[in-house]
Image (tube, one colour):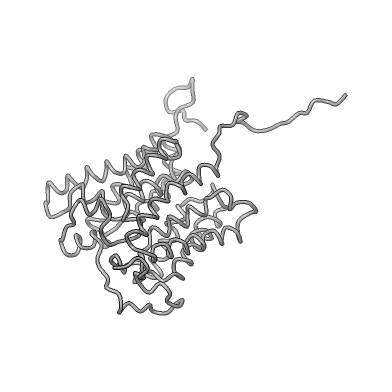
Amino acid sequence: MDRPRFELTASPHIKGPDSTPRIMWSVVGSLVPVVVAASWYFGVSALLVITVATLGAVGTERVLGPGGTLRDGSAAITGLLLGLTLPAGIPLWMALLGGIIAIGLGKMVFGGLGQNVFNPALIGRAFLQAAFPEGLTTWPPAPERWFQLAGDNFALPFMSPDLEPFVTGATPLGQMKFEGIGTAPLDLFLGATGGSLGETAAVAILLGGAYLALKKYLDWRIPVSIFATVALLSQTVHWISPEYPGAVFMLFSGGLMLGAVYMATDMVTSPTTPKGAWLYGLGIGALVVLIRLWGGLPEGVMYAILLMNAMVPFINRATQPRVFGTGRGVAAP
C-alpha cells in the first residue's frame, strides 16, 4: 500500500485566480491604448522609441534574469513605461540604453522582481535625464505625416543628433514656468500638446487606471491621493497668487497622469497598507507641486515618485495595523 503523500508548504494554501503574469500582462494590455494615442499624435517615431526601449528592457531581462522571467511581463511593462516618458525625437540608441539601465540598474542590482526599491522605468529615465539632458528636453511637435520622423531617431551613438531639419517646441509646463503662457484645458485633456509620448493620452490613461483599479491590480488610494493633493495645493496657491497655474492645468499637464496611475502604483515600490498608500500619494503630490512651482525644472513627477519610493519602507513600518487582541501601539511584526 502506498503511503499518503505528505507536503509541507508555506501559506496561503488556497490560491486565487490572479498570478503575477496575469496581473503584469493585464497592465501591458491597458497600456496599448496609450501607445496607440502616442503613435497617432507623434507618428512612427513614437512606435520606434517605445519598441526600442521595450527591446532594451526585455533583452536585458533575458540576459541577466533567471530563466523564464520574461513570461511574467514585468520587463515589458518597464520598457513600455520608459518609452512613454521619452520625447518622440530622441535617438533610438538612447531609448535602448535607457531600457538596459532600467532593468540592469533599476531591478537586477536589487535581486530581480519584487526586490527593487525604486521604479525601474523611472531609474532608466533618470539616468537618461542626467546623461543626455539635451536629448531628453528636446520636444518635437507632431509631424505633418505619420511616417515622417519627429526627430533624428537614427542618430549614431554618442554623436550629436542633427536637429536642423526639425522644428522643436515647448511643453505646456515649460511655457507656463518660463514664459507665463498657458494652454487650453481641452488641449491638455486630449493631449494635443508637446511633451513626452505619455503626455498625449490622459483619457486613455484614466480609463486604463479605472480598469486596473476595478480588477484590484492597483491601489486606487494612490492616484486619488496624488490628484487630490496636487489639485488642492495648486488651486490654493493660485488663489493666493494668480500668476501660478490652477488645479486643472497642474492635473492634466506633464506626466502626472501616467506617473500617478502606472508608476506610483507599482506593487513592489508602493506601500502595502491603506494608510500608507494615502501618505505616499500625499507626499508625491506635494513634491510635484513644490518642484513644478518653485524648483529649477518645469516637471517633478519623476523625482517625486523616486523620492517617495525611498520612503516606502519607513511608511510601511509606521502604518502597520496593530496585532488583533493587543493594545494600541503594538504593530504587526
